[in-house]
Length: 68
Image (cartoon, rainbow, N blue to C red):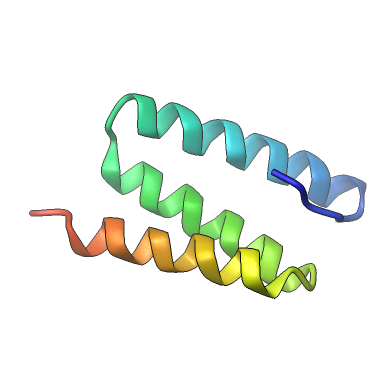
């Protein structure tokens, strides 16, 4: 992930990216959608609009596919 944040945002982005990867490997769709959405929000708030929207849209697609 190529994000240009302040130091605390960088650490947050790294942790979220790791959590997203691990949740995808575990095929944990709710966690994957959640972490992807939060990471998208972080990108968006950091001015990286396109990347933020892409992650958020992907998170929404995953969430919509979850059967309860």
